[in-house]
Image (cartoon, rainbow, N blue to C red):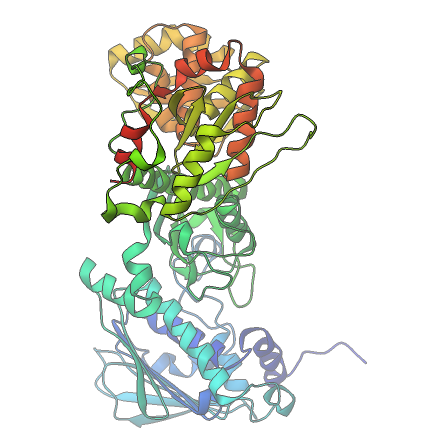
Length: 598
């Protein structure tokens, strides 16, 4: 077969195979054209799931009569005219393929009237010969596109269309996605003459919230974590559902780059990595995220349907999104811990004022413990732990959820337990809250914060050497006054011994390197607290670092608590009772139990 130029109809049908996958693809391309025209209201009418008829009307700038026929030609566009503009694409469409591709596989009519033009004109085109016919029509300012009988001339493509309900579901999802990207535009959607969706123009925050509720649901709107993170020319904003709302499937995951809908692998990986360890791998979180950056830093001309993009600094983009989401989640966990903290207990710290005598002198009997009846439900979380027996090398953990009677039995067992171990002899403990353990050693009781166990373990690890230094792809900076800058200068060498590298620029202190494996922590907070250590002593800095890392630990499982407790006992340099006195609060059990169930 000789080399030849393809007929216009065949070339456009080939292009349509990439651009026009189903009726929803047609709707997406036409709405993007309407948005590029500056429309503030877009009305969509669908018949039979888009099989029979698709109509898109807008109040945009319109197309002049002289350009109306050209608009249906392949590679005809008003969006770009040079290579420089191709590298700074601000519009949603720019290839000039959509209208020509659609008209090659359907019967298309394009009606338009610019505000400065007296009459409206209509261009009609069918897939058979691609000739455009112009006729005058009555039409308000703006543009309407009507698409009839999609794939009427390509039966092989038409048979792959799904049922009317399925195709309309895809169209509905496209409208939802676009409506979340442009709050400044109103949308209405009709199917078979019935109004299905109506999103009014959202000009203020309250109206935006209403649209978010309409699309993503009331629960998401009320509970979502709000994000607004910036670094240089990068900006990530939007909403992320709380981790405790994770589900195997969610129907609200939307990511936008410069206002363009995206299903990009790099972006999805950054989100998954930020959620790793926060939610189960089998679960997902709902989110609506908007990523904005300089137009020259992203290439949108890599996919015919424009679902994917290419970033010039892909690793930096990935790291920024990962860090922004991680910081938002860390802040959420910190606020949750503060809100759920037991207010009656003072913060646990090495403070000998906590060494109170145990009263009464005799151990209270179970039936002497007075419990407030209105708060007995708080005892439902009681868990019982036992150290491993001497002839068993495996960690042993047993826990039971108990009612009031079982709580008394658990307490009695705690008082009389004879479990012994070469690891923690004659020491029993209960996990009584998310943050605390109740320890019984001989006739003494202690409240031990789980963060204290983590801190002890970190200090033990630091004693064997700090992890190697790891550069941050996104350096962290904090504001500082002249006194803080001077103090940072004196601490730079000591921080370097912890493999923490700082520098300064103007009135900002910049963190450039941290110990490896610690990127998920909020280093803006840690750095500020490290710089507040008045004496540049290495051990004091280690203690401050371990304390802050421990405070940011979350979701410590029962098994992790058991292992931390065993390591604490094994690595104790003093008898357990003396070791506990350094990190725990010694309390009368009856007083503590009354406070705990209050």
